[in-house]
Length: 620
Image (cartoon, rainbow, N blue to C red; front, side, top):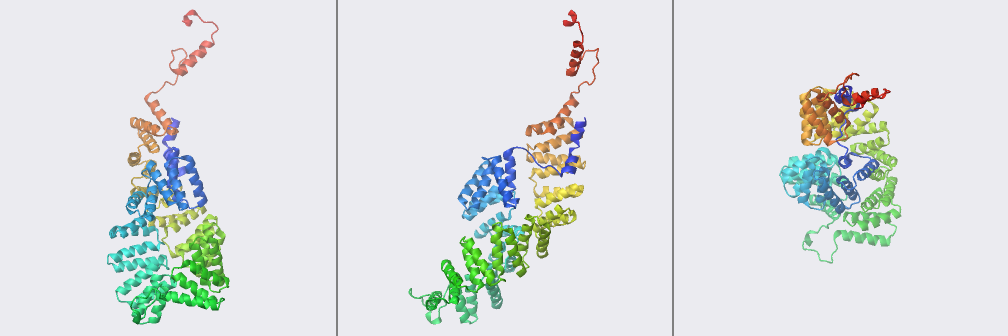
């Protein structure tokens, strides 16, 4: 009976000593699939690759392995191969939502919108991934299904707060629905996320023009020009405004930068094929000047700018290289050269260009940022820190870069610096869910549970479906024995994901521990209803039936648990104790009487062996 009491007290031990044990089964392929489903939560690249290798070794021909293969194909831009692997994944695991969602993203990239809509919707049925919402929003916007587009853009924007394209997309939906005030709000959110978002500047200016507010439109476009001087559409809008204001000189200038020449009033008819455009005339003039003065650095610089504005990137690179070869002191020359080289995948050349941009102008914030991003992508974290730090000296109100720094420090185990950087993020964006969750983890490591709880709560307030923050909070509350708080969190988890058997099982455990047996039974049964071979939930329910004296129901339930997982030791012990209750064996044996049972037979044989003589009667 001591063994039985030990197992009946297991819920308490589970809660108090381990903070729950949530696993379900030991089948290697099922384990691999569960691990694959959580790969997106692993931020460390080395750990992620090790985990992927483990998944493939666990079940090399299973759905999880095909899923990992798909991810690896995506990394090398083999999108057709990735699509094929995602399809194989879904053939074996049709309800694997992450595979459906990722497949939907690839279909959307290829323009297969009908197929994409189906798979993205399947993905979203279980995983509220903002990238799935964004892709669906783009599809519905293109199909002019504006209410659905607005819904999915809004859902995507809840998490992807720094993705300006989401807010621009939502603004364009509002423009199409003739709601300019709402559109302006979204364009402003886009600029808060990315001050260089040219489409947002253009969108705000377009609304101002519709309202006849030329000066407001002009002011907005000038801001856009300062942020993205190479945007041709922006220059053409500026040319149109200056033309309306009667400033033909500035109109001609911006038309040229926009890739079009401005025709004089006497030349309204189409130009002859041989007639060169204004940009071509300017290019030709600069080439002539260079022939006459080959060392004219300024001419090469201007030529590079014009080529870049006209979209002639190869010619722009050559012109910028000539200017750089002659030791141009213009930081923009090196910055623009680096941007074009990086765009072409010439990363090492881009690094050299950005370094020269910084040398020419140490206050070139964008050059520092681009150098930092390249260093970060290559795992050169110390160099990335140096460049990001220089960038932040110039543009301190950049929470996204503070966040990058914080993550680098966290990976390097420099928790003090990491916490300082996370606090910088939160000073600008106090409701940043990622920053709150990640700083909370650092406080937990330091043993400062009060601050950890505060930040985990903030993360959950921003995103109720943040399972990582919820699980971490539960763990803290378990250690401090705050069971009411645990119950509240688990109830919320069940409400958010009512089809997840794990959440119902966890809630059952806490009810069980609090001796709210009726509630515990309901939760365990729901977990079993959602997953009939749920061995842990079946075992917990059987154990609870025993505890409350419902032995026949306990026996039936525990036998189902044993069938679901024959290796579960606790189930076997509980079943044996039930059998003892139904079929008790005698415990004492008298020497002179007839004995029953194995133990009695052994005693009898022992007494016989001690006799020196055996009578015929005894032999019989």
